Amino acid sequence: MKKSQLLIQRKLYPRALLQKKKNIIPKLLESSLKKIFLEKKFDKISYNAVALINDHNGMIPIDDIAYTVNILRRQLERKFIDSVGISPKLYSRIIRFHYVKNMIKVRKDCSLISLALDSGYYDQAHFCREYKEFSGMTPIKNY
Image (cartoon, rainbow, N blue to C red; front, top):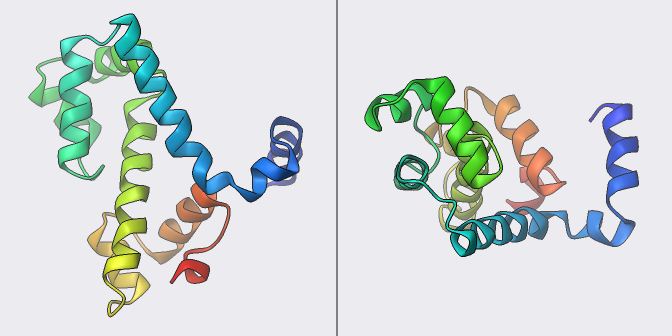
């Protein structure tokens, strides 16, 4: 992590939250989705996009989602951000992270590189970097 990112992170999150960072993302996502449903801001396109991302465990290109819901990619991104509060790419990354985190627990016999490649990561470095970004620790510590 870059020094500037670390400084910003320390200012935004108290030390206790940084230790529990792995629980922050699901709670933020859940609270964001609850807010959307309560305000009824969720349009059909965003709903279908979320369903596609969930069905594919975050391993579907955004262009394919846009094509499936019959909208241009940029329009999808705008509607998704308005409805969900984050970009469809970030949402996909979060869903993929949760999928691979569960796979690590379930498939103890597989190597991390095979799990990473099966989960749509380009290589092990990409997987480790994203895993650390979302959980605050390397996947080896959870393996």
